[in-house]
Image (cartoon, rainbow, N blue to C red; front, side, top):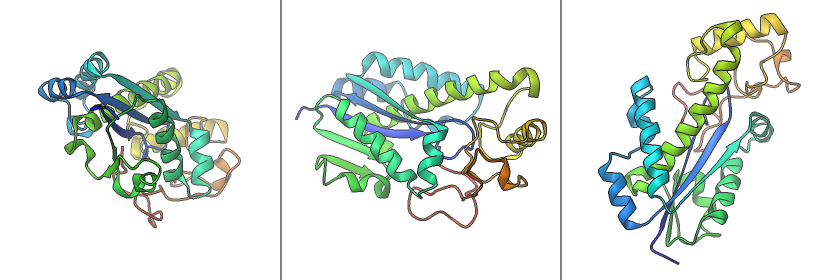
Length: 238
């Protein structure tokens, strides 16, 4: 093993529209120090403003320039619905994390954000540390968080542009909030089913089950830490 540290994190677990993205970033000690000095930290710490998105995009460029390796895995809406139907969204994340770890260069440490989520991988990778608030353990996790978030934002922006002419600007980040529900309700009114970018397994209040993509069962947003809550979480992990 080398002195490289591999950080893993995801973005887009909670939203009802669009994919989820996992990222992994391998850093040596020098790159870690430089990125920490530039202000790399957990992506959620920046907020959701235009300025925050711009700041994350700039830092993502720095990560890509300084990192030994950066990898991404995109989980499609269809894959998410399939795994959620089996109560296995955590398994989907772990499987994609394995793909990233296997593609990455040899690293002395692997730090994954989410203790209960990633602990099952420790027997396979004894050098893996599954940690809550992993970004506070090593900047590689924060760098992965930023890379995942910027890529997820870019994918969501493509969705927003696709519908802007017919539905106006799509806001709300794809979460099941008032803005997203308004868009989905109008789409359903016009077409009789959910938009293809919507996770049919997510709760869409006020929408009958037959608006799904052939999977009428509605399930709560899965939690990272155990069985789904009785109702959707107010602020799902992003």
